[in-house]
Image (tube, rainbow, N blue to C red; front, side):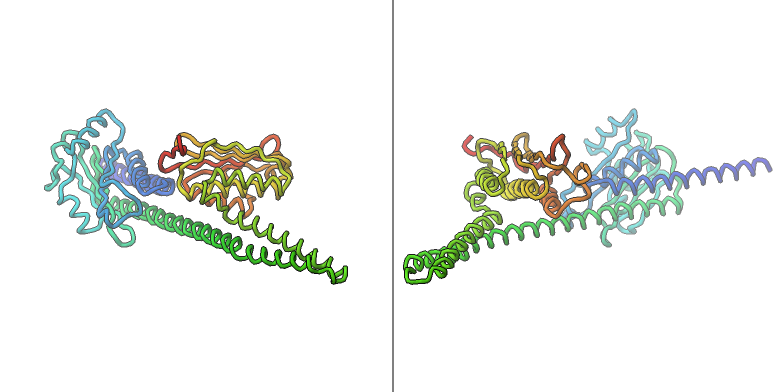
Length: 416
């Protein structure tokens, strides 16, 4: 009687331990799936967390059908080896292609699209790595499909040195793990699609700015120039007009000149022609000079001596960051001074814009304070699309905006 009670007690204890392990495993995978920033990172982090939680020695993902893209270029195989005395030997076996499952092994997952447990993996036919599996003392194996949008995208395999019993609980847990990984991949897809859409919208916005700037300069500006010429001609021939009429004529000419200057300024701010003709360095020098004249704010401009050969989207981003930052200095900071620093080196571009004004609302700081305007939000979006970072921080006097932009290919100074 005592033996039977002990057996039941042991069985209950084992079930509770297993249920607790499964619960911890699901939490670990859900957390890992939410933390990773790429599909490859999702697989890598999930494999590591699964092995850390369960104590399994080895995990592997085989990516199926690269032509049916997962949204990014992935390796065919992703491995994780748990740390231990023989981890280096297992790595060596993987690199020499000694440890690989046979067609029958993965065919079962592809055929059934269901997870399964093999309590004694070395007794299974069709497993090509049976010798090396036995050599490293790997006893049980678990297989798991990853199905995304109703398509089988990958097969995951886990190997344990301890015995793992085949039962419905493990299959349900593996199915839940697979669903968590698939959900993370779908989120990456949606995030990438949203990012692509934002990039297209920004490009369309830039193209529209360029078109409007050209129309204002070439059409509206030219029309007002002709109006000014006609008004000047009338003013020279208006000796017979009453003094009040001549005064109105002179006033009209002055308004037309002012309007023409405003149109030219607005056209330049929409899209400076120097940005296309001579690059961002020349465009920034001209813009900052005009900004200081219009605003009365002294800007200390620190730029590289030579123009830089960098992608067009980065040039536009650099110009818009400086333009919007100085606009914020004028509108909000009440500073009489500003400093713009542009540095290029180490495969990155660093931009700093500092003022001596009132600072951020409520003294907030960080990558992106909560209370921001449309301009900073747009700036942040542009920087993010280029893979960069934007940070706003308070100073003893004023605020500093810092932007770091990576350069896809090492840029070189023109004429260096």
